[in-house]
View 1 (cartoon, rainbow, N blue to C red):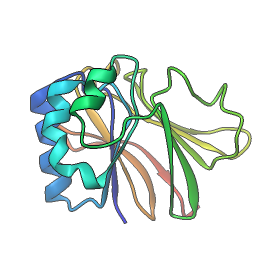
View 2 (view 1 turned 120 degrees about the vertical axis):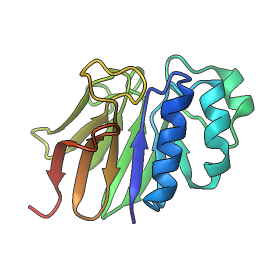
View 3 (view 1 turned 180 degrees about the vertical axis):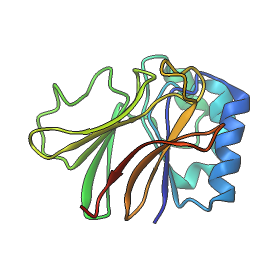
Length: 166
């Protein structure tokens, strides 16, 4: 199982198309989208709807829900690699106010990529933003049985890596 995670597209069609092309080329099984997608990017992503698990961001609206062929709740969940995964944009739910058990929380909103493990051994990760990064990396995330990687889509450089096997 290979999962691609993107966030904060903000209607940037070139980066949305680049993500879709990479998703198909690398044969990812699932695409997690952590909000702030907007209508034009949703139209580009719709052909992958059966592989998408997404959440709504603070810049998304009910208009996007009408266009999307995939659900856009504020929070959703998955279970992969023996881990309970929470997907959120981060503006409503985040590691500070979500009080249910989880192994991994994926969030967007800040436009800065990061991975850390808190004192409860929970993983908090943000893929950053493909379109409008604040850390200068137009980044996306991959998750597989080995771990979590955050990669710059332009340079292909791995920015962050957390190994599940350790």
